[in-house]
Image (cartoon, helix red, strand yellow):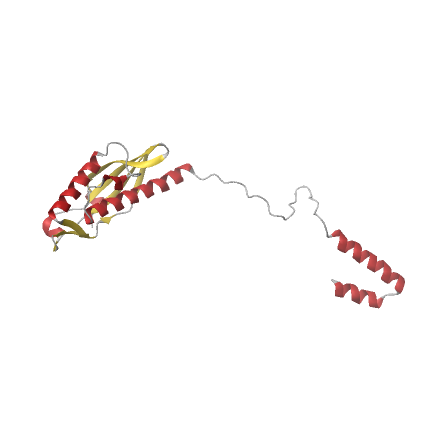
Length: 197
């Protein structure tokens, strides 16, 4: 802008030059200071973004999927590294957790006999169904056919020990307790066509 003003000043006479200089100074000064808001038009300055409330159902489903994943991580760890330490389920289960007692008994038995699981427990995608604002069911195909047994150092194929085995449908019941989602029950049933192949 200075170059444009200088070029204009060279071409005009002294009196006109003074008027142009004053006008240029006024324009420059007019740009200083705080902009005045014009009704209906923003100032261009950053402002707080409107708060967006997260979808409570989506937040619940995300939290339920996290607790389901944590449950299976602990379940697998207890089979691969047998222990009867119930505290591994802290923050994951609720209630008496009778199903957990069965898992811990099996794990303790494995440990006593020198047995563990090796390979891969295959779990299908988690399918959620909402039964109330405080209860979900999470279903997944549960396939042990590639999760072999290690008996005192010797690997025994799961397919040999479980002849005719078919993947099962594992269903976890998840409940909201004191604001947190927890696994309340686990059922294994026939997977049927849903878990085939």
